Image (cartoon, rainbow, N blue to C red; front, side, top):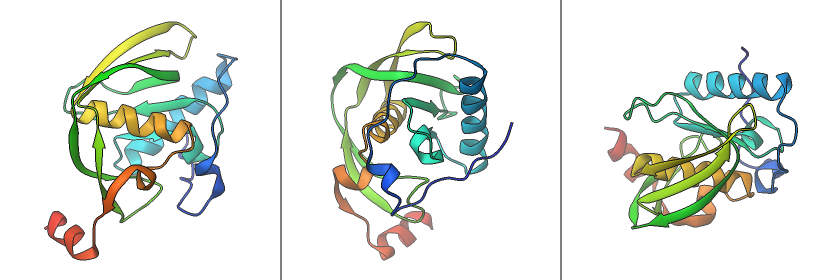
Length: 161
């Protein structure tokens, strides 16, 4: 596995909609493995392919608290959602920035695995937030686009203390 460079704020790739994955081959498997390693190395809970410069509908999520391990999402789409949560959200592509973002409290996602097999997965609270955040990336939407407001440096300092 290899660590990939994370695309940062200001790169136009973060605003572009990704193309679906059509080939489920070794190249995809390497991408998924590299993305998981990159996410863990950066202490993130999710990473989408455009964040490593790849314009494909691929994301990985690992919130750790539910002990599901890395969840690989290929061509994901949210098929159901309910409830609401509002909280702090950040992004590996926007280091040091945080915003208040409203998300569904529950989502159901339909996706494919690394072999092209379709599956559905449900997420609540942090997992639902992570699914929404990463799928937004695949549509060229970043958390700042949907934040009610961004936190001030003082609020971020208080949050981290």
